[in-house]
Image (tube, rainbow, N blue to C red; front, side, top):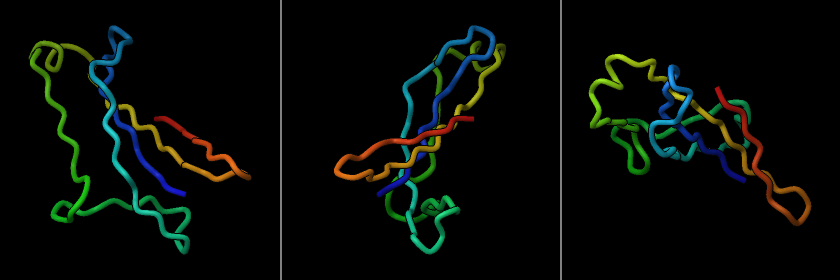
Length: 87
């Protein structure tokens, strides 16, 4: 049905998420089922993600990581389900 990527900032030292997740829709093409495509920088729609932090020390001193969760929205019979994988 559709695809999206959820991106979150994660503090590797404390083991806590720093902010809410941001979601970016992926372009779905039946002919390229194995490819995840996104709008280019200048295209209309959800473009690049920019993460900011008021706490400069967290960004400089701690182990800040980005967690990517790839989500497929699938139709299974009369229901829709989300299937995801995170890195």
